[in-house]
Length: 135
Image (cartoon, rainbow, N blue to C red; front, side, top):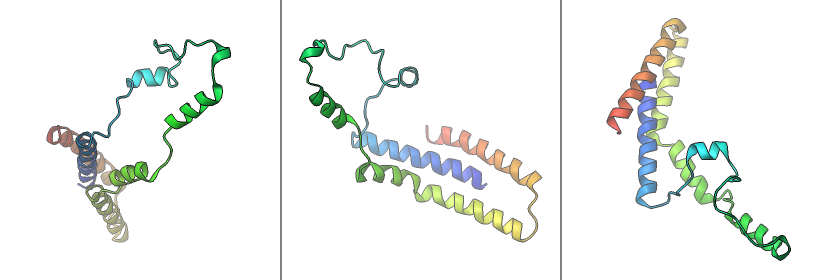
């Protein structure tokens, strides 16, 4: 049951975070995932970066421009990542899972042969329900 709640809560939290980014227009257009995997640094892109001869390039200016493009760790970026990971909808099922495990262990009723498959059933059910409910 708690695994089901974890999957459902995580899906709901992720959907809410993505919806907030879309509403505030904070998302970025990115490359296709396969392109990113095949060519992580964009070496084989079709557009030319610079057609200027090497003698005329201002390398210091180019380095400064490229450093400005790199996203640094900022409070704003940390806040968005932290908000998605500590959502109350995600934390409560994990607490229930841990407390349930501790209660079973303390009462000497914990049977891993039954506990692990029941978690698997909860995970599969949670994944299927979250796809249908949050789609």
